[in-house]
Image (cartoon, rainbow, N blue to C red; front, side):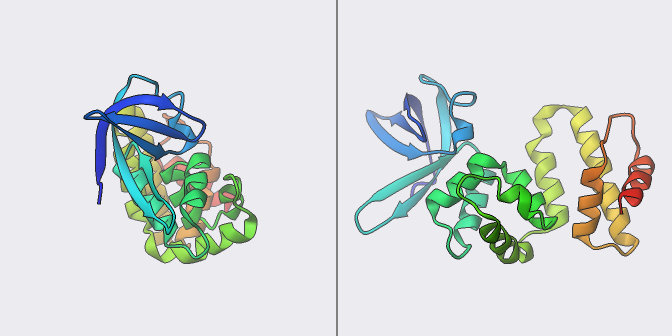
Length: 202
């Protein structure tokens, strides 16, 4: 119904903001990571929104990127996770971290998010794994980090190529991703070095 709102941050609360647009103030629940460092009073921002309609209320949930909104909606599709739970997950993990945690069967990382226990994390992995793709996850992370500069992009490319090489050798995507994540990658490493260290981890 409301795809996004461009406005001025009029108030910042504990887990929400009031965004003023055309003399109207929109009460929007946001991840805690958006507060303070990313959003301050007086900032003019574009907030992508999701309208949650309940019997007794209509609530807006907002995000600074379309990717975060899409991941939020993906989480809502998991049985037992409502808007508050999904917002809690995205307060503890970025969209990229969540995707890679799901693909790597990393329930421990997901369960670090506020209000998410290990059982819920395992269920989340089970329900979302088929909806995510390793290559897409790398491409999305690359897009999200495009502003971080060429060094970061180069590292991401090398990491992605190492995962692809391991899957070509017969390892599962989850095992390959887990092994590459264990490697402490620096800018001077090429794919071959990352691959050798990842194979040691396996």
